[in-house]
Image 1 (cartoon, helix red, strand yellow):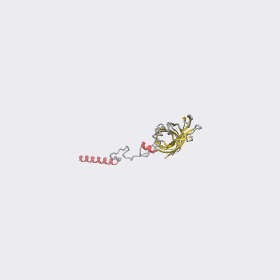
Image 2: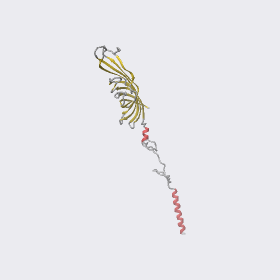
Image 3: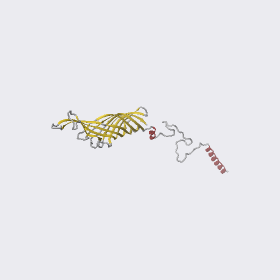
Image 4: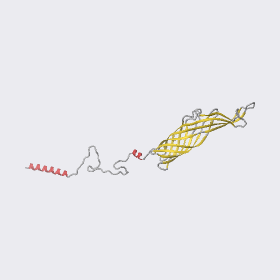
Length: 289
């Protein structure tokens, strides 16, 4: 009889434990491989980040932040101003005489396309311009000259001139570096000049009154106008410039610019020392594309 009571008491205890488990809080186990710091019985709650980002999404990576800020600027510019040129060295068109040291200043137009990376402080582009370094070279000398007849030789003053036409189209790939936190830039590049016209002549005149050439004139054409030997070759020069970008609006800016070129090639193949460096001062109007 006692064994029956013991058996009944054990069944009662098991029944009570089962009933108490039915009233306990339900527990949801995570799926295999998932990890969550949230309580198992509640759905996770997504809150908006303090930096104003997308709810539920972390802070944007650095690359995305750069792209969102439009770091690349494409600028198309047109400028006007003036340039100066200097004929260095000398050349001899048709005799032992040498012409040198002519210079000039002319009005100038130029164009530029630039790709700028503001966050990196660099840019690259192409500068296009036209140059006309034409000039009239003059030299005077006194030479002992033969006079027809039995008259003794006399000293006669002569003037030699050479009209040089020298024009080229300049294409300059350039690299620009901006000072930190500034719109001031330094530019370096290589100028490639494509000759448009390269010609010269040589004319001599008698300046001393009362004397002429054998034909009775005072002018002698020593060389008809012709192409400069080697003048059609590509012009190569080092180019440098400084400037400052002023943006009137986010899309429009102006850039004062000063630049110069130092030739690495000569004008004529027959006169290696004849070069033409240039310098310019421009005001560029830039449009952001």
